[in-house]
Length: 328
Image (cartoon, rainbow, N blue to C red; front, top):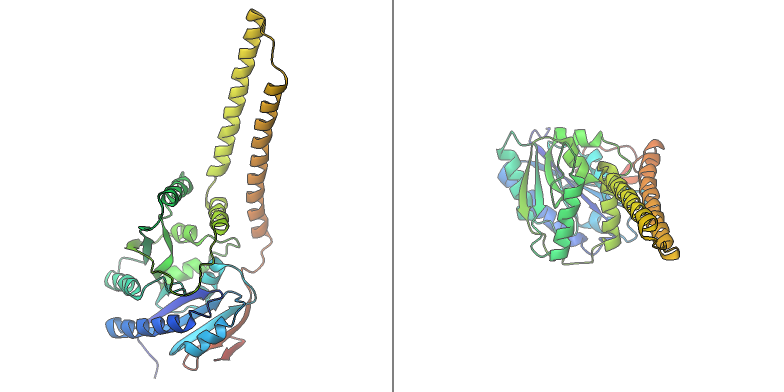
């Protein structure tokens, strides 16, 4: 007999998380039990192996219970793409996205689901990191980033909102139709629109393993956001060039009047080096920035698949087996 209950898909990407597999699988079991008892929903778990180099997929397949599938990508494509791969596999009435590193709690997950279930006019509920433990410098840099990227936009990217969210099925279908090769999910979630609500939360301390995000990764991720959703960097560099040109005109007028009316000798080497270094630096910065935008355009124009799937491992209770999937 067909199960007529509403279905919740849980999408969780992972990369080299073999150590946290048993604990995360246990968390998913508790979450499934709570969702079933509180909301009467069936739960299907979709884990995406983003090209892990350990035996995480095997550990998860041994630890998971109920209805689940593990999508194994052919290599590491990055978390943003792994989330898309999970959404592509989802067919639920609602979809919850959460990390597999145990920093996204069960309580906040249930709170978001409850908000969506009880508010039919809301399409998306997302968790917004309150960053209570962030340093002053990091919080100010984050604020500056969001201020710049949201400038001159018809939509705002919520500050400190990540992938941890629950969405209705139509929102997921809309998001999967966006096939950007260079993905910045924060921007795509905001660009798609729909009625969204934020819930503040503090991430749990990571009990096992270490974060895969370094400072360089965060800088590159921020640049990805700018080149995908903002023209502000180009405008800043253009404005800097205009100011440099204006400064050159003012300095030239100063030198002219000093020579013509006061007979002051024009200093040669120092002023020449300052001008060369300043203008050369501005030109190289502008060329590099334009190169970033050109690279994004080139990546999109190649029209390669966003990701490739190695295989899909299914539990015995999973339905609608996709082509090439194997039973776990």
